[in-house]
Image 1 (cartoon, rainbow, N blue to C red):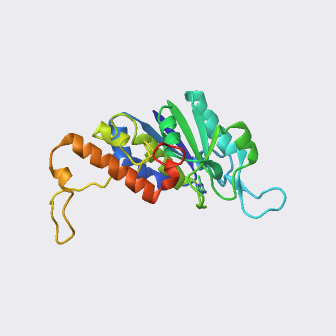
Image 2: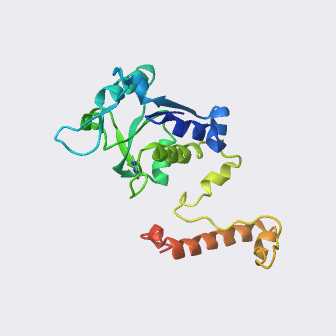
Image 3: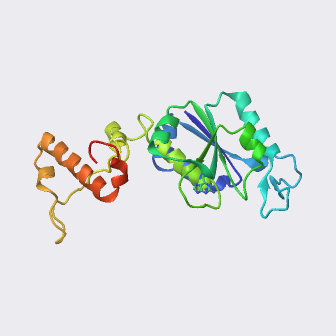
Length: 230
Ligand code: 6GU
């Protein structure tokens, strides 16, 4: 898989893509992440990529030309399954969307900024508009990082234990069960549940499922609406 991220703040994303599971997935050859500085694609001698909005509204608007030049260049090199724009008025990002995007060959993520982008870009170049939640960020870079992280970590082989991505909270619409590690007793904070120390695999699985259901009912009953567990 290949993810191309277009941004006016490449420094914000460069470290993120090198670190942790995303960094390791790249070294393993599971994904290539390329960060492009939008300013490298403007013909403006001041390297400006935004301008005042027609109509006299407040704020600045990202111009068509640098975005068009950058995306056209990428598209001339390979096929892209999606050209995503990060925007608070987009479709809400979710685990099913991450799952679907992780099956793509190549995607572009264009990070929104300022008051927005010239609407013609959205009509002519963008195939999918995505928000990561109902709050406003100063730019789309953190949203692009969130999406990239969620997509890359479920690529087969990205996480050491293949099982563990599938047993995540949300992967089956249930929150994950609590986990513990050594020591089995710490201060007076209570013991790790006996069943986890029993070595009885079937009983442990049963406990894990019961915990998941109980925590989901208590913390996120909305996830169970319309299911037999409601
Ligand atoms: Cl994708 N962008 C911005 N600027 N704010 C957001 C967002 C995206 N998702 C939630 N808030």
